[in-house]
Image (tube, rainbow, N blue to C red; front, top):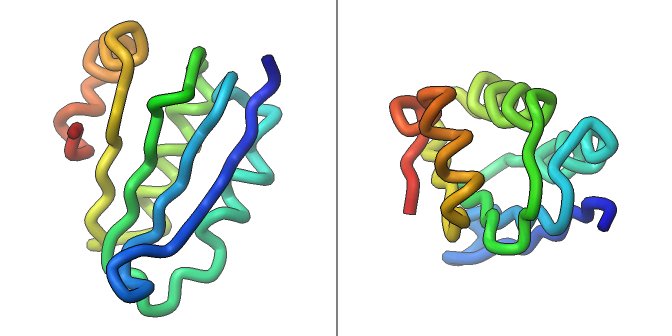
Length: 100
């Protein structure tokens, strides 16, 4: 299953929600970056990984780039399945992102 990115705005357009469906790998690079290109007025970002079945090192890099680009904006990774949570924890992403 190839990956897919969906987005929506919540909380009176203050929270950007990004869903990563399927494989989160290099093939999603352009779509993932495009999801948060225009973030004027956004105060938080939620990346929902409930439908993510795979992450690789490029996905980790994309999350780090999101963090670097957004600066102080609060970023949460949500609905993480146990296998992906283990990968993120081994990479110490639990120290850089809020998991929910």
